Image (cartoon, rainbow, N blue to C red):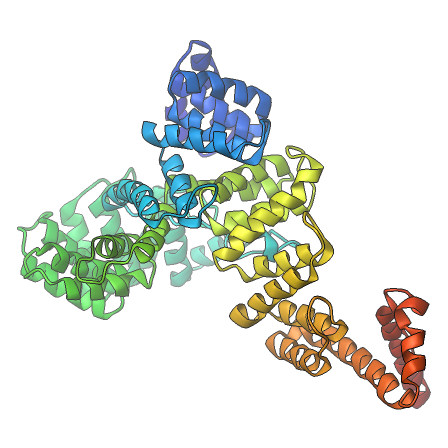
Length: 576
């Protein structure tokens, strides 16, 4: 009953009702219900967070051999949340979890072996773990399309988290609905798509999707016709599976040259749905749709050449089409590319490339839905619930979750981790995110070493990280910070010319840097002028004065203030 309510309900109130059934079943010793309750207590579903109670439940479940409990205990040990911080113990739990069939444990171990986290780096072992998870996900993807999950970056929107493109604001949704009712075909198709797969924080609702598609199709939208065809081909509550209806709508769209419609007809002929199997016809339609850039058709062509369905096997062509489709993020194309690199089929074998591709497929698993629940918890001010969900995703190797967890930790608003552990833990997570190519995280590591957050003050290391962020990612912030360090000779030898150049580069890279750069350059030139001109023959006196001793360590800020005051005075006199 609980699971049925959970699957069918849309409102939070109904979902909360499901947990009353889980609680009753758990009291009677039902293993799956106990797992559901433990998860609710850990992640704070419906405000139920109680980590101590969750751990007690997980420990008794782990003794019963529950792989979900073993994975959860591994996760809590690895962060030291409610348990002793113990990486060796975490590794044992994850190993037992993966042996029992936990996909999350497999993924965590894959990431650990890929990155060498508390284990020796081993690409082949990582490949083995990631492949198992990717096989499981690909099997699900072949049955239905994966749901892409919106991953909101907290670091980019600290001021106003509600105005982001990943989650559709309620007011904007109402406005779209108004436009759709007024006959805006494009909006009708967009709303249909959002409801079809449940995107941007909207519920999946087949009835609403069909309603908007039918409206747009009536007005002549080929895309809407193709999506109606897709709904009838796959079958759901609003549009029961019907090959003849699917064929009708796909044909209507294809006659207008629509790529989705052409691909749909190709599928009908390829699988023989409502028409006899005809690979030649399927190939023709897939090629037409692929030429129009439709990634699913490109994948389908790749699959035909890979498996030799109706054509001669041709791995070179298969690779070409898989690669084309993967550029648009087609998950099955990425999966087959990984397979080819893992086995050296049609390409030179590369363990590293295969692992990176498999990792991308694994990140499409149903667990990625935690990105939304974590985001909404954060927005509602439930910081602990948000952190624990992001932290689990971070442990599984999601870069966005690593930077989000670090961001929450450094805000020091969470209560589930001791204050003194927050900065070291955040530094560790920024580091993992930086290794995965996050420029902001790379700058953050520089900041932590510069100020001594969670580590010893180390200007040299800070400068190294700023250099990486500036050279590799063209980060304006890193250029500015590096310029400041060159100007003052912090951790690197003093170089005024290089400082000038880096300040200029920061201003060119980002318009936001213009004002800070202007002030920094005015200060630099003024100090330089004082040194070079006014005290030309008084080098010894200059050394003796030592601005740092007389005005304190923040004398440069004092100089900036003085310059700004002089500028204001001059401008007032000029226009007075």
